[in-house]
View: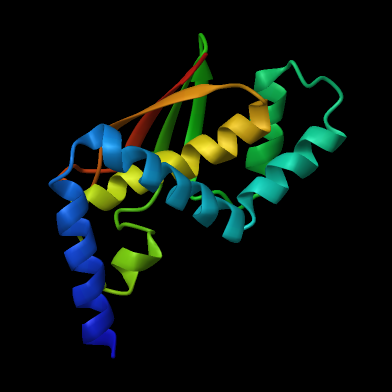
Length: 148
């Protein structure tokens, strides 16, 4: 059964990777957003927004998020830009961890995962760029978030 599931996942990812990025990015954004919800990050971001005194203080929101989660990434904020760097030297995606796939197109799902968390936390539109990923041969997973 696991081999059948792995083949299914890889077939879909191979088809997605052959599509134009704009077509599959929306799908992967939604998948990543769902994953962040399922792992409790969206609820945590909403909880923080309820308890923080100054919702316009981005540094305070980020610091509160760091303190209230066992976050798997470092967050640095400066000049309307957040740099997100995953702390581990392995991919935390459950699909990759369970050996279903190591297709780098999955890294686009991470963009949706991160976007959902921080657009909720900061109540802002955000542009997310994937700068580096382990599955693409990088040394780490690193994303740049620009507040719009």
